[in-house]
Every structure is written in C-alpha cells, then in structure tokens.
Length: 315
Image 1 (cartoon, rainbow, N blue to C red):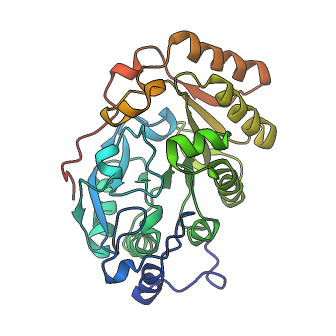
Image 2: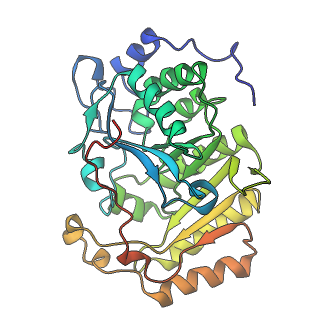
C-alpha cells in the first residue's frame, strides 16, 4: 500500500514536539509534557530510548524465518501488565538514548545482518519519532517489512499515523473480561481499546500476504493470546471473538509460555505455570470453533528463555 501523503501529517521535529508536549499517544492519555522532561504513564520522556537491537529467533515462524526478525526493544510501556516477562524493560529500568538518525541507521544495520523484517517492540509511546526514523531509513534503502509488535492497548489516532509505514501488525489480545484487565493491567477498558485497535490494524493491512518462496509474512495481522493460569474461560472468549470477527483472515498465535515473575508475588493465582491440561483445553476449543490459521507452542516452552538480555546490544 502506498502512503497517502495528502492525508498524512508532515513528519518533522515540530510534529514530534507537538505530540510530546501534550501526550495522548496511548489510551492512558496522560497529557504529560514529555518534551519538558515529564514522564508519561509509559515512564518515558521525549527522549527516544531502547534497550536492544538484534536478530531475534523467538517470534512466530513466518516472522523469524531462518535468519531472525530484526527486533528493536523500546524502553517503557503504557500498559505495564503485572505479569510482564519484559518487566525491567517495561518499567524503563533498561535502555539507552538514541537519536532519530541513529535509529534509522540501526534499521539499516539489521537489514544488512540478514533480518527478515524490522520488528518494533512496544513502541507506541515513541510513534512520532518512529515515523521520522522509518521514513529516513526507507529513503536510505530500507526495504524490509515493518512489524509493529504491541500489547494491543493502542490509541486509534496513533495507529493511523503508521498507515503506509507498517506492513505487519503483531498485537496481543490479552483479555475480554474488564475485571481481568483491571486486576492485571490496571485497564478495565483493555478489550474495548484492543478490539478497536485490531479493527484499525486489519483495515490497514487486510488479509495476510506471504512470500511464496520462503513462507514469510509480508503483510497482515497476527494476534497473540497468552493463556494465563486459571483463566481458560476468558481465553475461549478471546478466541471466539477473534474468529467470529475475522475468521481466517488473520493469524492467531496461542501461547503457553507464561512464566511467573518475581513481581507477581502479590497475585497468587499467577504464581504458577499454565498446565498442559489448561493449554490443551484452549487448543481444542480453537480447533472446535474452526480456527485454521494459527500457531501453538509445544510443551516445555515456559522453561525456555524468551527474555533477551536488555544490555544495549546493537545500539
């Protein structure tokens, strides 16, 4: 899809500054003046910050391929789920400041290393800077598909800025229940916001497109759902919603990798892994309602480390 330059704002530093001065980039709409050093609900100022940029092999097969996804992990998060596996990163405890030109160069370096795509991980609170960096990198030879990897809690107007820049959306759909959204993410409106965001993502990309030679996704939406211990009923509601709304025009990735983290000590229901029986129950439900385009994880994934070192690699 070609970028509609008539309807899109002109991306320059004034564009960035205006959105950092009164931040409404995520559904928290905290109105922080990040330009003057205030931190938003994401924990970040206007200073572009990331903690790692490297080939990443733990995404879905159609993204990781043989050489890996070029993942850039951004510091901070507007959602901050209590069970987050990237907790240090989400809390802003890890990260290095970057300029927009340096970020554009990183994208090109990942392309040079053989990445199949550029994977922007938890980047909503830096979308204005990303727009500049992506346009700059594309003007300098970046040709890879761009993946927007998100917890799903997104603001529609922010997503619209990405139209024509992002090729693949990789959102979570965590819960339907407002009670679970409030307890685990302090966001009773999670499903309301995430479902509206998903509709916008699908509008932008349409049905999935794959490279016939290597099976890699070039365009489309993959929705991730992490099964939480003791919450298979809500998992079924998530899957039913996705299938009734989009059928097999999206891919669904059903994940069993939930791992208890130290910060979940105050949530006893989360202090265990998902059992094989729980995960199997959710998979059987997905098959029963007709989900065909999707991914599942084999046993033992919770013991494997899906958490990279946020040590500034590649920055």
